[in-house]
Length: 157
Image 1 (cartoon, rainbow, N blue to C red):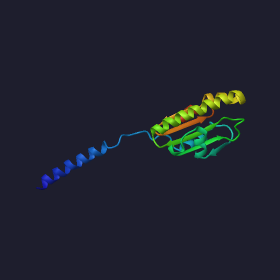
Image 2: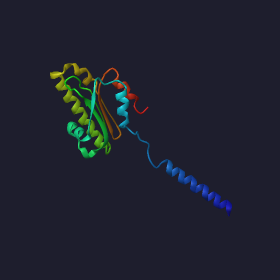
Image 3: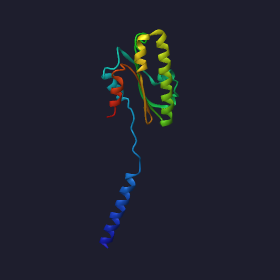
Image 4: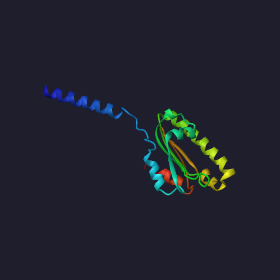
């Protein structure tokens, strides 16, 4: 009887372990608000950056505020001199992230068009701007185009 119970217990344990191993697919965690500090510390932005709240980010980027779960955003303190910008958004789902990515692309394009007329020195930085989406997160960064892509690529590694 003990032998039958031991075999039954072993079989139940094996089945439960198999069920656990396949219960959730692995996904990329995406960007985090902590990644913003990594970028700020990397020296890819010029001058002072001021943090803005997520309500303002939603307005500036034309993103539905209800889809933003978390995030952080910094803009150059003197936008007449610098176009540097950093935004990391954690959105409700991947579809919201796709929408936010498109909004970031529109913002960067608008900033580039404006800079061509008013701050031509900022054009190379805007042209080298980075927009990346991972899962339900989106990152937009405008800074030193010779350093920025490499630093962004290192996030999460």
